[in-house]
Amino acid sequence: MKNCSRPSSFFRSSSLLCGLAATSILWCVNPAQATVIVNENFNSLSADNLNGQGGWALLTGITSAPQVTTGVGINTTKVVGQATTGTTAAVARNTSYFSAGTLTGSETAVTLTFDVYADVGGSIEFFGIGGTYGSGYSPSAQFGIMSGNWAVRGENYGTISNPVNSSNVILTPTLDKWYSVQSVWNLSSGTVTLAIKNLTDGETSYTPLYFNAAQTQSTVAMSFTNISSWNSAYARIGNSGNGAGYLDNLHVDTVPEPSGATLGLFSLAIFVALRRFSAGRRASLRS
Image 1: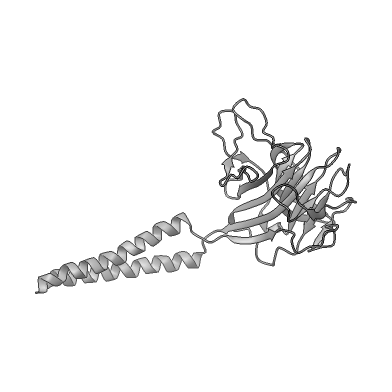
Image 2: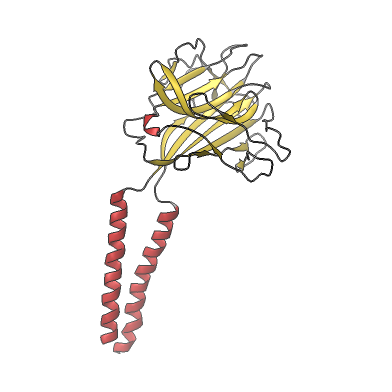
């Protein structure tokens, strides 16, 4: 009868260890929950100038803001579009999204997503976040359509990097289509990705874009400061021709590093489980 209890005790202990092992694997794969810091679809704003609504404000030297208006094509909700024909730039910022302490500088990555529609070649539809300097603005993570091409851009209006196809030709969006565009800024490696999803054509997953003809380089190095200084969202729409496009569904989330306390508690749980397993195993062998 005593021998019959051994497997039960052993398997109970083993099950505990297996559960902790599975938790360990899942925790390593997804060590911390993402924190949403921007989520703007403009539906709560009035169909008017974006300046002065929802915390948005013009930058120094910018005279025209985007307009909250009705979208086109498959998106007829409220969106943000170019103010007037011929506007060369429309830039706004919003500091109300960023609560104190949300961005600490310890995050490992920032994922930015937005919807974009271009109706004129050579247009600009950019979204990003960054920090203020004086009365101006220094966008750090910015991406979208620049001069009609898919692009990511470095800090403070710096280097522009364009993805290319297998013939080394810079990729451009198809006009009059809604896209969801996603860019992951890896703060540990200093690299950036760019991916698109054609919403008009019904695509349900993102297609990564590559920065070399061999289609093997899915990241590009990009300089940007510690995100503890990032406190503003950024939207730019405009070109020198007739019309530009629309932006919608601005979204940003961060992935924080695991805290020392979390690691300590997890290690303690493993230690206690191992001690219980060892004690149970010795008792089973003695009986």
